[in-house]
Image (cartoon, rainbow, N blue to C red; front, side, top):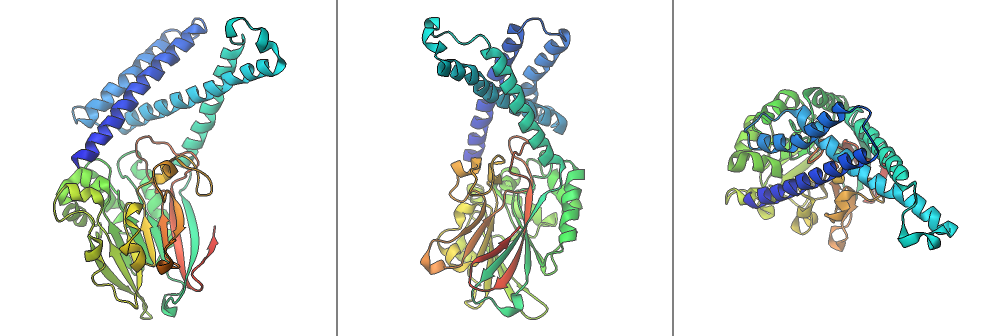
Length: 405
């Protein structure tokens, strides 16, 4: 857990330093355009935005309260500044390219930039910032996306044909989402009425009190056959070795390197296997993933549904035994799209987001589904990668994906 926290703090400090540099550059750019029309207002806003990182650091250390609106203001401003500078860079290239193509660039003294490059930079920065902010705000206020998949499995027990599994992941209760938004998600789950409700970790984000919010809103929900879940790295970062006990006490049905047999009214059986998160290994010897122990009770004739938080656990014994594995953790990078479109997550994960089939010939027809999740981490922004939950319907068939919408 200490290594994870050190990594997080290094990323945070780097982001804060970059933020201050971008903020100073933004202020200098505004001043270079002449006297600000709003004068003192611009100066006060600049001072406020410069001081936000100080408040953020103190709130993470529990010296000051962690007020959601301040965090959102800081990270949205940070996102807007980054968007502005990317757009400004692209905009400034337009007159340069036009000059070069027209042949005038050859006669420009000392490689001087075209006179209107700064105007193009401001326009490009403003346009991209507005476009991305509108997209990000839309993802926050629109209902979550419900993805429907029909998955066929060769040899599936006919009594399981039509069984539905709703996959939720990465709620991050208490981080960037108010209770109103969480109740909207819960109402969505209730209307979907799945046979199995599967939750793949990172329910809470930063404080134990967030487990109480989850309990109040989500614990009353259940699949027709039951609800199953695994812990994520944020549960361990927040609660340490007591994660499992605390979350179970708050109504989170944790499977920790163990399995549970669910049975339909017609006698069909699903073996749900839950594998603990790697972050647990840094907390205590009895925490962390133990795939062999989790698979102990699996029988050859059972359909196996596996839950993990991190998709890196899929390959190997778990892939060979589990017909369908559900994972989260990546958030799809929060920016990008599902394959074949790129996403930020594809830079760091072999299985970034979406549905994957095992390349192992011994695991023919076995699948992994990685959810982009419902919450936020780092910045309260999603562009293209809309908060999502996935409803999967199992069918007996050839083992190929037969439908998606």
